[in-house]
Image (tube, rainbow, N blue to C red):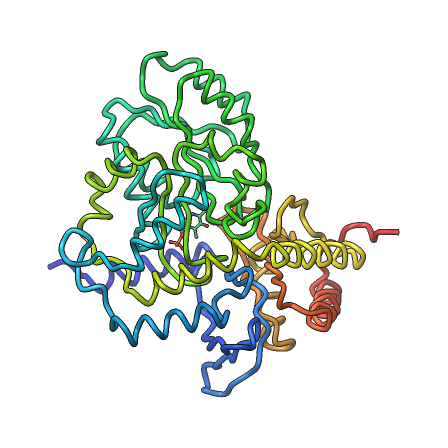
Length: 408
Ligand SMILES: *Cc1c(COP(=O)(O)O)cnc(C)c1O
């Protein structure tokens, strides 16, 4: 008979052999003290750590207005949503949140989903059902959730070289002029920290009659006058047909959504299995996200502080000869170049210095480009930065990892 246990053991062994077996840090976030957390070691002992790799980019996960909204929602409406949106799961704060999100992105409508992953997967699959014969043009570094949705729909797809508009144009030009087309891309790519050319992509979409689908997961809350993302910053909200985002990163809670013309949202609402057949977000999450979005819209100084912290950390690493990779955004990636050193440095930062940063290894990034990825927030103060740069400097010497020339 089939040896089931062996199959699972082999699968885990394979991951170990490839050096991508993950051990999660057991952390308890400390409300009111972000980015501090308490780590529990395997022996049960505890350690205070500074988290340097959170996607709660602005610390909104502990903002008093968000916490207050979530607590009142529990008191007023209880725990769960009670069903799918079709069957009993539409709550008032979900409706209000969708209206707020739509106006944020200057679209007619928005549709909540249970996560950013689900929003990408469900929407991209549904678009292929809505428009049979759709041809999708997908950036080579798109997130796994977009790839899943694109594959799941089964339509023709072409992958263009990352941020390479010339390659994209070659592919668009080769497709039949009258076929429906969709360009799927991200604004901020979170592993390298580079930003797509939105204007250029939109121009190509217009020229070849394609729709645009933009993942602003790592930009919403962080860019643009009101924090609506890079499309707002670049003044091209109108040129993007479908914007996809998360409520789990800068917004600090959990969930995902799309924003688009009313008819697009209506069609996705009616066709996307990943929206229809799943219990909707609980009132506490939608109320918390609503409070967070309202706060983010009105507080550009948070975005300025966030950019300042990222810029300062990049400069401080560079001054110490730590090989910070070129990044146009708030992401601060540091090049290590092999998985063993990346893990070793990350382990030593945690155990010896109380600094938590996750190594980023294959398959998230190509082999040979393993790195540490820092995400400083407005809550990371100068003292924390001093401790980080000092520890990194020591470890770079200790592990004999390549440096870059020290800035003069
Ligand atoms: C994290 C992420 C998602 C998924 O969002 P979740 O809300 O965490 O499911 C989608 N796209 C990109 C680019 C991401 O980094």
